[in-house]
Image (cartoon, rainbow, N blue to C red):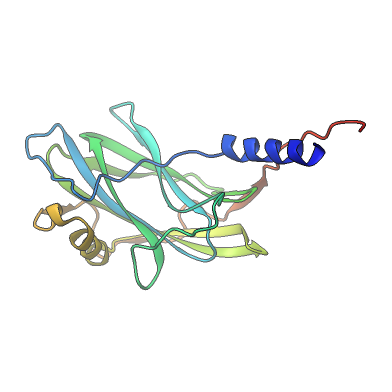
Amino acid sequence: MKIKLVFVCIFIGLLSGCALSTPNVSKQYSLDSNSKSGLLVGSIKYHGSLSGYRVFFKGVDNQEKGFFEAGAGTMLIPIPPKSDYSEVNGKLQVVELPAGEYVIERWSVASGYAHVGQTKPFSIGFKIEPGKATYIGAFVFTVTDTMGLTVTGARVDFKEQYSEDIEVLRRDYQNLKNTDVYLGIEPDFVKENVGGESSTQWNIPWVYRPVGG
């Protein structure tokens, strides 16, 4: 009985710490030029062990907010997600959003009980146009410290990797194969060490242990 109670509490703790990333559109998605929404195209890539690499966004002129993720922070089932890229681990982000102005100003890495975050503020803006697809860039995570398989340190670079990302879009989203994707970032743009050095917090769930037999 004690073992079952401990297991249940750990399981609940893991679930309560989970959050769902903003989902990609379906692989059969077609862009409607008359829509009031637009399509965001970008990517999150990572060099290092499997964890949940996240970039958070919010609307400036609307109430939208969420985050994009590559990898997985908590593996309840030990099957690692497949990378969209052959040379690096990562996920192409293809997300429908209401037209408007947006800003990205936070990143994090969820790695088991460790949560790695930035130490300096930053702001990267992008605009979604109605009925259009816009490429916003690639966030590239590099693990700098680990404790076993747990990530305890990371740095993030923001880059224009249009050719690499659009190649994946054309391959995986057949209905977007001939869609024009506007470059929403300067060609060859690179912003290194976004958010500065990282810091690590540990969130170890409380486990109920009954007293007595």
